[in-house]
Image (cartoon, rainbow, N blue to C red):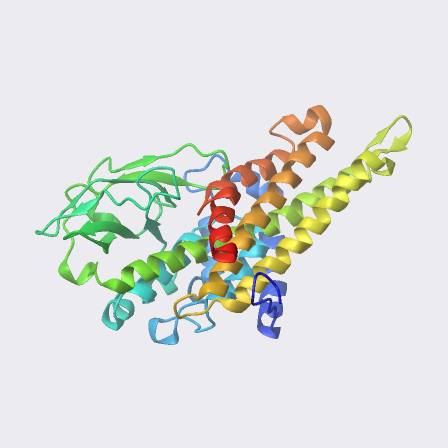
Length: 375
């Protein structure tokens, strides 16, 4: 009997097809030169490329057909996001998908059918969860008062500058609740963009003070706490899937360099000091892929059970550590050039640092896994 309990892993024909299509699309439409061209732009991505992704149905892939989606389930996001990670493609897909999942899981059918069709059609949305940079904090300081007016700020809100809709975690009448805020409701100067180590990503601090929320856009009840827990786990899984793809791309960059760079008349790939860590990256990346698809096997559209929680936390802890090691070795193997921003190794180590901090780092998840597995 395994200590982790459920060890099921399935990779459906549907997922295989999505992975093939997504890999080909990202390979063709997001080569590294185009990724670099977006690093200094305001949004970090090409709007025309986002429109193509929406046309492929990715924005609504996990949403039910009643809300304009494809009804394929949240697990189908994993192969798409893995392919995006491999191409270092930064778009609002993860933020929008998680915001949609929170509305779907916490809201009622009227709210879902009113709000989600726009997201399925490609309108970017995001989650506003953090009061500070600590994913382990359960404190909610942003208040929704009795008159439906918000007081407070959320930090590091992903894709806030392009989002048309914010799903905000608030304190309302002493309980944790959700408030749906449209971008046009925000006051002048409400968005303060953050400077992130990974320039393919964007986030901002958002001041929601003074925003009045209509009663139809307030979500309360016990299901809010359950939905928030599940979406944090799903967020960890999707970041893990993205990190797994990025680790695979980083490995390919390393191997290409080892097969072309010569030192002392020999290819540097012939030296054991470089071959062995490269194999370690390969095995870590393959393991990360097993973890994310194990988790994808267990997650569904209903509340996540203990096995699904364990799987999501394991995937996040392992995948982000794998990318961190791959990025570090990529910089070291490229020598002096690896420390310059012109070297692609810098993109991967920066993505690794960013991925570690999203939805909890490895230590955050291992601490919780210890309780889940060992009591």
